Image 1 (cartoon, rainbow, N blue to C red):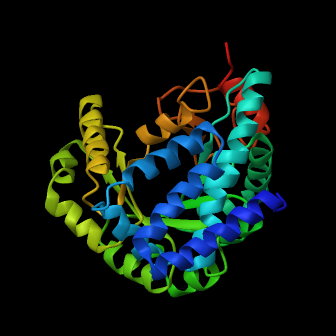
Image 2: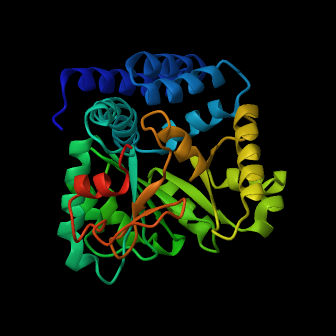
Image 3: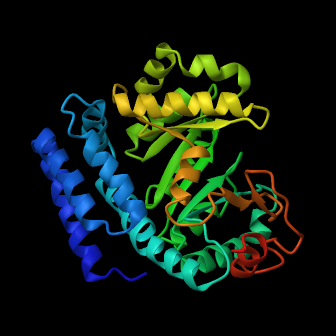
Length: 337
């Protein structure tokens, strides 16, 4: 996507506002939320920025601290480009394409796709992922969620190739090495999401020192629910300074526990007492999908290239990125009946 005049103007305004935040935080943060809402025309963007605007009416909101901290430690180019790729390319331009295609085509298009990347096979399958992302852009998909236990060589070059997209890379903190960050330093369309494990503190400190965008992810089990809702747990998370704190339920979690945790996440967001944005990786994604599609399915491709749905629905072998293009797969897997 070539930068059009509208994006250039918005980006210039956002950059100016970020500089203003460093000088006069409270007033400029209000202006940022108002400008973002006025620039966003789609339902998804209006919902997101409208909520942000309402929250920032509370002058005691912890999100003021979050924004002030973020603009000071994150490289401005990374912050602006990633934010524009999410807010403009994905939630505005991409969402418009998705809505138009949903009206004319007989299949549904998710606003983002998850890809589980296999360390051992990526070098042989990179072209398949390259084609998949290019096909996704044509359909209006600009946000990609990547899962990789170990980060294979060449993955960052794939992210670099599609600089109009926003990539959120979920990985263990043990992956955050000086060598990796040296290669990632030139990427302005990447956010790391670090799994909550024994390496998390060191990883977050390293990313913060390097001015990278990062969040944390807490995969939780049935037994973890009470821990999540303990104030001391979130107080520790705050000391890691993540922009977003993602929560992801284990497949063994009951629906009651998922709903209980999600209600806590929503209540905590509304209270605005913690300077990180709490999100349920699945349920918040479903909520966003409802703004664009008839269904709220959270979908993606597993390590074998097979299309899957979080709901557990199974699909034919033809729904595989090694077998068919994305449009064909979505037609087969997500038809509009």
